[in-house]
Amino acid sequence: MEVHHQRFSVPFEYPVLFVKGAFAPGSTELEWAVTRDSPGGRHPVFVVLDAGLVAAQAGLVSAVEAYVRSHATLELRGTPLLLPGGEASKNDPALVATLHARFAEARLDRHATVLAIGGGAVLDAAGYAASTLHRGLRLVRVPSTVLAQCDGGVGVKTGVNAFGAKNFLGTFAPPWAVVNDLSLLSTLPLRDARAGMAEAVKVALIRDAALFDWLEANADALARAEAPVLEELVRRCAALHLAHIARGGDPFEAGSARPLDYGHWSAHKLEILSGHALRHGEAVAIGMLLDARYAERTGRLPAADLARIAALIARLGLPTHHAALTERSGAKLRVLAGLEDFREHLGGALSVTLLRGIGRAEEVHDMDVAIVEAAVEWLTERAGHA
Ligand SMILES: NC(=O)c1ccc[n+]([C@@H]2O[C@H](COP(=O)([O-])OP(=O)(O)OC[C@H]3O[C@@H](n4cnc5c(N)ncnc54)[C@H](O)[C@@H]3O)[C@@H](O)[C@H]2O)c1
Ligand SMILES: [Zn+2]
Image (cartoon, rainbow, N blue to C red; front, side, top):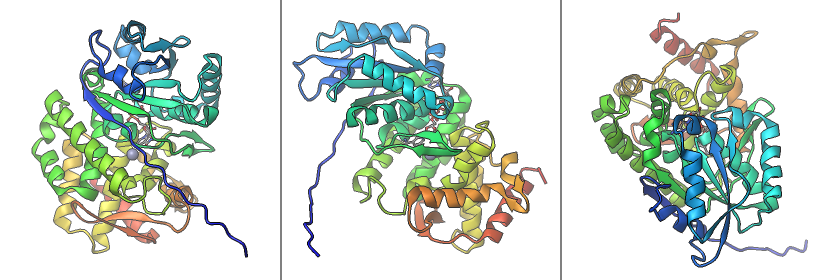
């Protein structure tokens, strides 16, 4: 056997900025984020926006255009492209083709920037298209939801849905920069703001008991989406997320463990089963409580911790049940298919994150179907759906 062991490593780095009013005429952060490798040059920029965000913030498109035009270092290419807000932009394969076509028309090269502004779904779709054109354009994300600012928008993944599965097509592609503009959150509907908080609960549960205490102490203000607490939640949650990617030892998820996907095996399935009536964060809230009950039943999680988790989720105005949870195909709960989808998505053996306490997680490689069934029944009874 003749083997040459090819080996090299590439350091990744990208700035994550926290700003207010990123597109205000005098603001310089976004320009810096785009031009940071050669501030004197001229940088082509193609703008992709979330139509839901644009509908809520009249004048945003012209503000972005004016911002790009007013900086000599930036060059607007093409006309800004609006993608439908939410999961619709990840469900339609034609949209990826449209993105590719518009990038090609605008003659973007690998040093050109796709500036994607919107919720996690639009960022995922725009990021996927950007990462596959010429094997990867620069992507500057401006996330506009709580979820995207604290989770998906600051990470290294892109994706769209296909073949009935979430994120079936996707890439690991670190962004060129992320600009978290906290003022964009002001128009976010309460329901979406709360859905984003589910990811903060998740990261607190697996990593940071002090954050969980803080979430409990501020639950009422958070449920009303009051700006100061929302901003602190975004900062703390984003910092934990970034630390996990940088120091968790597996930024591109080569292993099978994926603690940031706590509660997600069922959540991804519930999103699909509900026909996306459930928001991602809402499905995660249900999925986290399901797995918390499982952990409690299997002697891992103290009952008192389970009670705290259930209470916090409810106080944040997040759901703890949905009819999709009890749908059956023959005798089998349909949500259970999420376990196999999850294993397949990660590769290798099944690996599910369960809690040993608040802020403490472990990986398990086997889920007892009867106990999952009983946990679903528990959620159903609690919700009065029995
Ligand atoms: N790439 C990753 O690592 C990662 C991680 C977590 C989640 N995600 C993905 O993110 C998606 C969910 O993203 P999300 O929770 O940000 O929601 P979303 O993108 O589905 O947006 C929710 C709604 O809010 C609207 N909207 C966005 N910003 C707004 C604003 N400021 N004001 C008013 N309306 C606004 C959108 O148009 C949409 O209708 C899911 O597809 C999920 O799979 C990806
Ligand atoms: Zn998630």
